[in-house]
Length: 278
Ligand code: NAD
Image (cartoon, rainbow, N blue to C red; front, side):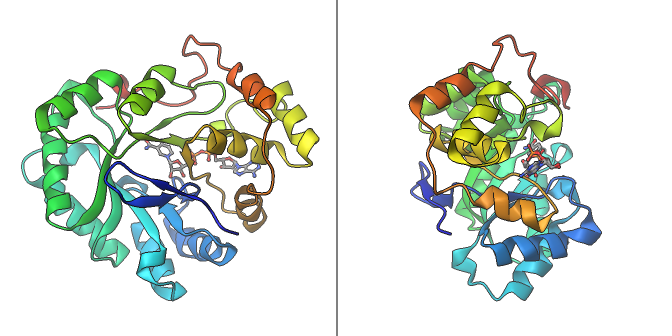
């Protein structure tokens, strides 16, 4: 199974599909990540706040896979934006992961009420220069946050990782990202199982037309939109299913029908709004 790569604005490349480990219990993480690596995943998305970086690191160490063949992302938590905390935080993450550098380090949330995301982004630029991460990006940043960090530093994030699935497509952010060469990573790509995505007609009929599951049709929609995805599951058969999405293509009409699933008023959001997280 060859997963295509996407080239980031700093010249580095990232596998377009990976495995996300939000809510994978720490005690189960080594097993789950080991299975994901066995099945063929090479891109893992974790975060300091998930509490499972050690399990990710243990699976990487036991896998015998060459470091250059893996793409590992982790994230700076909200209470560590200030002073020199980002440097301390990435060193702790690297220690847990057993790595000398990560491939991508993200500011997890902008926490706008604290007004420290510009400082955090300045520190991210330093962490990249110090060789602790190959690429830097942000997560959950709205257009005004993105504009402000770019204005302050001149450095455009490689990615913005945001909640994105058919009922919540965040077009203002995706348009800004396309215009500024920022790749979008869709978190909650399957809607976190929080609404009836798989029975929705555009998804169910696209899946049936290609002899694929609804989850595979939705993942294919993300990929064909150019988004990077890392669906989460702890079940081997679903890990396999979610990777098996490179032998079919949705038609333009099928894509358009899924595009039309977003009511456009923000009501499809299933998780926290960035302004609420501080
Ligand atoms: P998701 O949309 O990937 O949904 C995961 C749920 O979907 C699983 O619990 C499982 O029940 C179900 N599922 C997975 N594969 C399936 C299949 N083939 N068929 C049927 N059901 C299936 O949601 P997520 O885990 O929140 O998002 C994916 C990743 O995004 C996370 O693991 C994490 O790495 C990242 N994330 C980032 C943020 C952020 O703030 N940056 C927030 C949430 C998640």
